[in-house]
Length: 285
Image 1 (tube, helix red, strand yellow):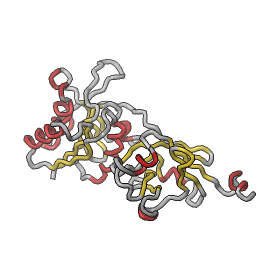
Image 2: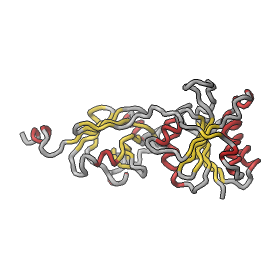
Image 3: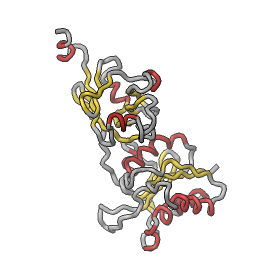
Image 4: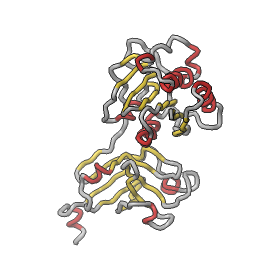
């Protein structure tokens, strides 16, 4: 089965997504179309990258992913600040996007299998009116039909790197931030379990968020390990630290976003007190 996924910032109140799907089905009627998200914050390629990175491994080899977020090219021939429609091949899947920082945010420290620039579309001004449909989607359709990538694009040496803040560790301290709020209002941070466990699995800690009054001092294995309505911290399926309210409704009426005022970009601190530290000694007096 041939599969194509769509990730956009177009929402579902307008005709844009329907137009994309109609174009695909007209050309490849038997294809399976999967919506990853159409509610990415406008032009926010880092959020699009997070969503794709969270689920692409669940798709089979040969899947085509079209990312319609900030998809209008910036043409600056000979300059370094342009952005061009491009194709990334990674782990036997295709990722088609404007080279606007998405690829760098998606790959992080990983390396591309190959990278290609779609350079035969920039001379037609009409294509700029709906670049996701007119520039990116046709490449995806041709790949679904079995065309080789070297028939559709030219190899290119590198993609744009994006500024993607990473969690940092200091002496007995981890600093990170909220990078995504999901539909339940859960705050997903950029603090990965591997970084947390470098300090040791049994080292006491306090996780502070928003202000000193809000803290958690235990990592749970599941939401239901705390009573309904209580705050909870877990490492999610992808290994990232998540702050939530157990059964806290949704991001409109509850959840960590509403009840704690947590938003994307907010700072998260984890302070450790290992045996022999000054804080640990002070607790005895």
